[in-house]
Length: 546
Image (tube, rainbow, N blue to C red; front, side):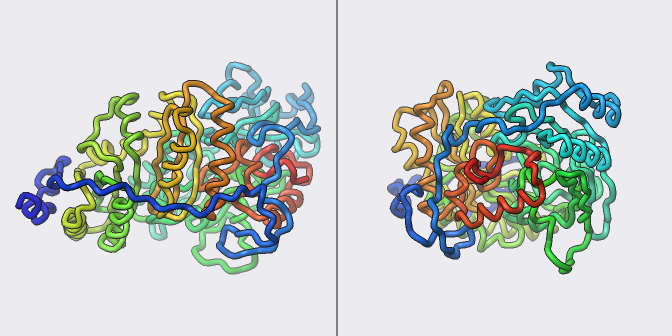
């Protein structure tokens, strides 16, 4: 009887207050945890078949192993390449073209030499801060002639060591290239310099009734050029797609200083090769992005956020199926986190759980143009989810302050992890139904060797963020995690990097996700565009690629 009443009034209960409102299902027997078993785990180093799976799902002939172990640690730094050292004459040239913006003070260089996770530290002695594309062109032309290695750097929020020097590479910061160039209020196309901070662009667009097509936890620091260079995904990819679709044009300075002007603002342009796609996700190894034109959607007039709890991951996936079917065009995000994430949020950030404790939590966002229409669709979905006993508890927010509070439960997991110890981070793409099985298997594999093993991420696009913590950096623990995590992912035809890139840390694991022919072609493209290899060396491509 109680359950019947709750089911029939679920929508009304969710809407009974402008503030967040709690919804609880009646007590019911707990279903046994059900997970899907992955295919047999074959080590890529042991695969000798002449056919290897490509990322597209097609099969291509291959005659090499998926992974060739380098002489040094796979995620460690290789030996320094024979680049020139910076001389006083070099500094004099840089000071001439960048008056007051050539930084050599070690104290000022410190933060630019260390990555956000504080796991990679370079020893650069020069930080250059250009303001224009012409200045970037002059810098790269000179560095190429002198064989000086250059590390392009945006907001330095990367997680794979791609944004900081490995040795003494010159740091080329785009932070002062922060001007918005044009915005077309009819088409919604924004053109700006690469150093614009994502949050600043969002605020600029919101004043004009538009939004950025991507949203990231690091939006207060990350820059649009770095977002494009790493093909950042984020929380809105389910609704608006990847940057490969929303970026319309790029301006890029090549290694020899030539400026490639592909800064188009056209939705359709089918004339020849789409060269901008080469630089999206290239991590600064093919050129330095100096300007971006991007298609921005209209700001939703109606936004709702729901925070739900589920007993099993299987029920979470069924909720996702139901959600996509019933919410359709207004669904803009479907995120999840597990109970271990919630524990870290409670313990380290003192964020209270907005609902009762559950093994799994979901953050659903809807955005549309009609509040009444969206509310009705959401109410129908919630009523159905309750009637199907897929959801055990939940809360809804429609006010901006409450929406922000609920989103913080997902966005601040990374922050909470930094307080739990040394963190090993993995950004994996998998078939949606297999996402959480990797977390379960990793816990069983590591036993009590890890302090915490947590899983969260973007269910809508099959992206798992697997994080493992220990009290301190632990080589023995790392040896237990890798290559296990990569072998597991490869056996499921997944990707070892969904949105963070390869950088320094994962460059040598690329063969777990790409066949040797594809990697060799990447090397050919790199050699053509940057024959001296001065742009972001030691990153993205594996050490065995000569």
